[in-house]
Image (tube, rainbow, N blue to C red; front, side, top):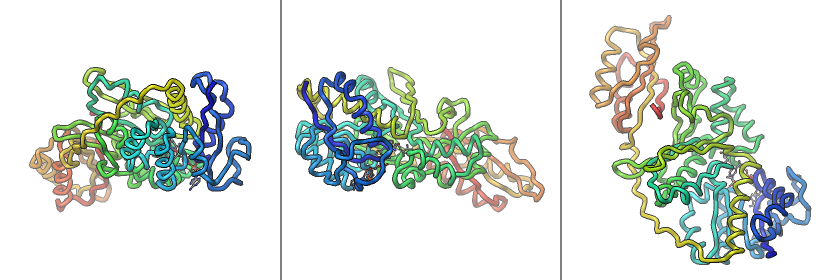
Length: 428
Ligand SMILES: NC(=O)C1=CN([C@@H]2O[C@H](COP(=O)(O)OP(=O)(O)OC[C@H]3O[C@@H](n4cnc5c(N)ncnc54)[C@H](OP(=O)(O)O)[C@@H]3O)[C@@H](O)[C@H]2O)C=CC1
Ligand SMILES: N[C@@H](CC=O)C(=O)O
């Protein structure tokens, strides 16, 4: 049986689990690959660090370049831009195949890596980069290649779902749940990438690129994180039979493809509302397949390692059987829809002076901007002791531009004391 040399870059949350599986399940992996997968080394920053799993000491090295230069397959799980980018380029340039979970790097440099891989005949796979253990990239790119995808919408960040879910179900505090997500190995090395939405935005760019056969990068994704979501927002949503989730949405519109990440209100009857903890789920709509939903563990060492090993076996099989790689698909230039043109509906929560005519003025403003009201929550105005009343409005779908203008004009009304929150609503 052929032996393929595997270099592992990184031995953190995910890398340590990949090493464990490569060592513990070597026989099973060899049977499935048709080749012995020999772990020849693990590059880390500090070889003395105690690891989550027992790994022979002799495997560790700080010389990542030398390790890459002797490998048939390089698994990059360092995270960040450098040295990950240079090491991936080094591997691909010499024809070694690369597996990575580094969505931030792929969203920035994926097209260049694809070209390098094509030129040298190397394989590049990155199923772990989006939604942890869930097989989503291969289904989108391969299984649905005979269909036309119209929309991809999902929860693709485990850390933020873990935080928002805990705020909703137990009333836990944002900061406490972020610390726990870090402890459990869900968060990025710099967790601001999770809570500010950048991790989900990178995944949205990758999903959109594969779903719509065009190259999107981070700059094409409208991105809002969850740092402004308060306990009051979560409670108000709950009160209205809704839940707040951070969604990544890529959809075909009249003027192109819109890709966005933002906190979104969902009715509790929506399937995505039932995605708890660090789980992820992705809805795909295609012209002929209709609606599909993919669900599973979206973060964490072992679940993510499962996706990495799936790619490793797939790469090894091709290295064993040989044969030409499929020709690289000619990517169309991205026609990114202007965010202002995207159609959505708004939840507007505001406090107003409890005086006659307020409701009529607000209704008039909304209509003036061509927007229509779907629901006035809590029956419209509900009086409080100090003459201030809370009002919650859910609009029908309209353009972002019209909705933002509506909110601005409402905020200028003398009777409006504060716009307490503006969130988007999906699935109504
Ligand atoms: N955690 C998760 O749930 C998921 C993570 N990913 C992605 O997988 C990748 C790895 O994530 P994760 O395992 O959580 O990250 P960790 O921060 O836990 O681990 C990173 C590893 O890389 C090593 N490393 C970092 N920089 C260098 C360097 N300059 N030279 C040598 N070694 C270096 C570290 O070495 P040392 O230990 O010595 O410090 C560590 O072993 C990231 O791209 C992440 O986005 C993808 C899906 C899910
Ligand atoms: N930090 C990420 C890890 C997986 O991609 C997340 O929380 O989803």
